[in-house]
Amino acid sequence: MAKSSVTDLQEELREKRELVSRCEAALAEEEAAAREYVQKRMAKAEAALASAKKDVEEFVAKVSEALGLPNPRLAKQRLRRARELLGQGRSPEEVATETGLAREDVEKAAAKSKSSSSGSGEGSRREGRPPLKRELVREMLAAGKTRSQIADELGMTLPAVNSQAYALKQAGLLPEVPDPDPDEDEDESSSASNSRQESPTRMPTPPPAPPAARPPVPPPLATSSGDSPDALRAEVTRQQGGQRARSAELVTSATNGHAHRVLVDRMGDGTTQSDATGHVHKVYRFVVSVAADHQHGLRVPPRQQPKA
Image 1 (spheres, rainbow, N blue to C red):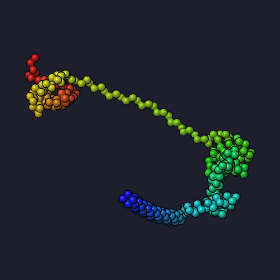
Image 2 (image 1 turned 180 degrees about the vertical axis):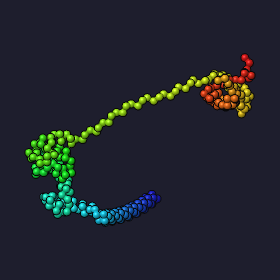
Image 3 (image 1 turned 120 degrees about the vertical axis):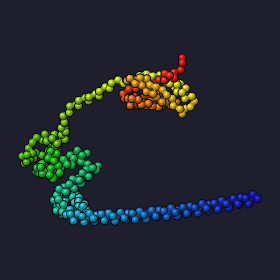
Image 4 (image 1 turned 135 degrees about the horizontal axis):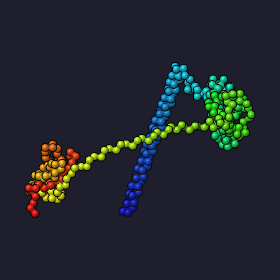
């Protein structure tokens, strides 16, 4: 009996292991199918993106040709070719002639290439050499170019070129080359100081505004006192006689030569009766509100005052 029970358990365990194996195989198939589907979708998306990019480039080329503008794609290819030729040691004039670019564009490409190469571990600044733009200014001054020409070719302002030249002279890196431009024969130190950003002109502080006129002080509010809330509440309870829906009648104290009859509920809420003055007061919790610039107090009617 025990042997058959063990055999049954072993058989059941074997069946469960086979079920787990089948589930793992099905899961692996589902995972492979999902991965293949994702890869196909990504390939389609990349192909659609490349096609759209190509269409956009062709459209930009057609628009540029119709408007007589340079093609941005061709300009990038020319700049890439210009950097390759400059890296081979060709002069800017030769590169400009071969690629059809302007000389200023070729020199800017050369400056960008030098700045990118100076950012490596062999940077010129860490070796104590001047920055790239200052080095270009030094080379152009040594070649006999005027500061105006340097400013035009490097896209700088004349004060900025003068500042670079002053820094080179202070460091002892600027050769004694006379400047043929008479307009540039000014003090270099003053040019360096002028190249700094000038502080904005301060506007005069406006005079303080006159103090606002104070509003007129209103006259004191005319008012008169009344009975205590407890006495009024007791009078209302007495008049209602257990009928809470019934209103009770009170009177106000005299203010500005007149008084009012008042109808209130058990909570002390109500309103005054209109008189010859033509105005009324609202009453809330046995307190008469202000109306017509005066206020009354509430009192128990004299004819209904309890005897002492």
